[in-house]
Each structure stands twice: as structure tokens, then as C-alpha cells.
Image 1 (tube, rainbow, N blue to C red):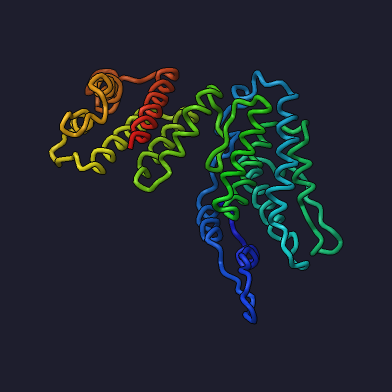
Image 2: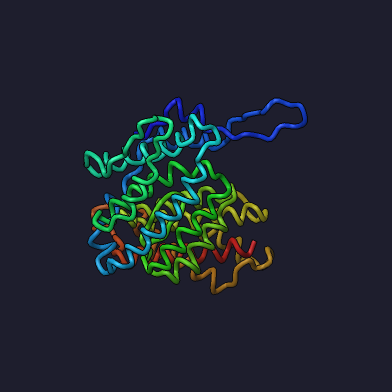
Length: 337
């Protein structure tokens, strides 16, 4: 498990500018609580263990990987770790060193290695800074790309909570570097994921996640994230969770608009609420038929027990289609609200 030290908890604070004559007020930032919760949970599985390198980087030229890691090393040093430098000389690099040390420990443990790189101490302890060692490792083309992605993911996870709302800008920059290097990988919610097509990522995925950020869509988001996690790790029936996310979105829309009666029996009844002429025809008849067919022909056969018959299963490409179908529909329905 990743651990947050008492030193880190003591020094990671936000200074609030005092008023005239007032003493400097130091308040605990919300990111600290979030950081403690996140890092004391079970360490997330490493990128290298989630995705076989042979599949992710099989057709990726060395030059593209070098370009990305050179860009990300410069960016992380200047815009991420650089923001953790303290104004107090005695603890100037402490937050940086804590983040790098914990990320290194987590990555090495998950990858089954004694260590990934050496962190050198200065003769004066308060001048010790592991940033150069960390960035040199990220930019070292001799190191396996999947292992560098694993370390980078943990490092960003350690730093992210401090940025709070500003982390969206960091995500955007990282995704720009990935796209500029022609890597079929996307970064969101502290996680790197392979993407099937850049076009789908840009036109469907990003707008989708932005539309369901509000609390009322929490179940939709959780189920779709589970669908992606199962798809990416070869888990069972990712399409089931994607369909459940779509059904949740339909129910939320019906409930929010006051169309639900309490007598609904399954997704089809809620779809009827959306297509009802009395309710203003939120979806057209042909759209309702498409949705019902998906639940009837795709979701239901795999969601229920098969008895003594063979359990229906979707193939890889079918599961990908089902997930994209659900995302596109959720995006369309929520955008109509």
C-alpha cells in the first residue's frame, strides 16, 4: 500500500494571505484529505500489469515513445513537480521527494523490481532533490516504456490532489503530448488507457466524461468506468456494466423530469416515459425502438442466467461496440437535458 508520512501531512499546507496586522493563517487543503484516502487504499494495479506491452506498443516506433517521454519529463519537471517546491528552505524539496519516493516504491513493488532508478542524496539533507533522477529515468529510452508509464502514473497520482480544479489543465496537456507523439493512449482520472481510435476519443470519450461529472450521474460514471476496466483487463462481460450505465442515465432523465410513475418494470418502461407524446417526445419513436432492441437483444441475454444452456458471451469487438453504443447514447441523452 502507498503510505503518506507524517512529515508530508505536516508540510503539505496552503498558505492564505493575511489581512493587515493578522498572523499568517495556514489551513489544511482539501487535497490532503483526498490524498490520504487515495494513497492509503490498496495500490492500483500498474499500467504494465494491466496492459501487455506487446499489444500496446507493438507498432509504435521508438521515436514516438522518445518524443512523448522527453516532452512529459520537461512538463512534469516544470509544471507539476516544480509547483511542489516550498518557500521554506528547510523543507524546500520535501513534497517533491515524498511524491517521487512513494511513486517509485509503488511502481517497483507492482513491477516486482528492487528499484527503477537511484535517488541520490545531497551532502546537506535539506538540499536533496530527487527531481533530476526521476526525470532522467522517464526520458531514458533504454528503460521499458510500460514500466515508465507505470511510474509516471503513480507519480501523477501522488501530485494530482494538490492541484485540485487545476488538474484538468494538466490532463489536457498530457493528452496533447500523447496525441502529438501519435500514441494510442489517453490519460484521465489519474489513469493511462489505450484507445481504439483517436477520433472516438476526441469526439465521444472526452465530451462523455465531461457531461456526467455532476453528482446525479455518479452511478452512470461508476458503471462505465467499470466497463472500461473490465474491457482493458480482459474481465468478464464489460458490456453489462456499459448497459447498466445507459439504463441509469435513462432512469435519471425520467426521474428528473417527473415522468416516472413507480410502476416501471425494467429499462423498456423508462424508455416509454422518454418517448411518450404526453412527455414531449424526449426521444423519437425510432430512437426508442433502437434502445429497446439493444436491451432486449444485447443486454438481457447476457444479464440473466442461462440455465443448462451455454451462457451467451460477447466477443471483444462486440463488447467494444456495445460500450461505444452506450457512451454515444448517454452523451446524446444527457446533452438534451
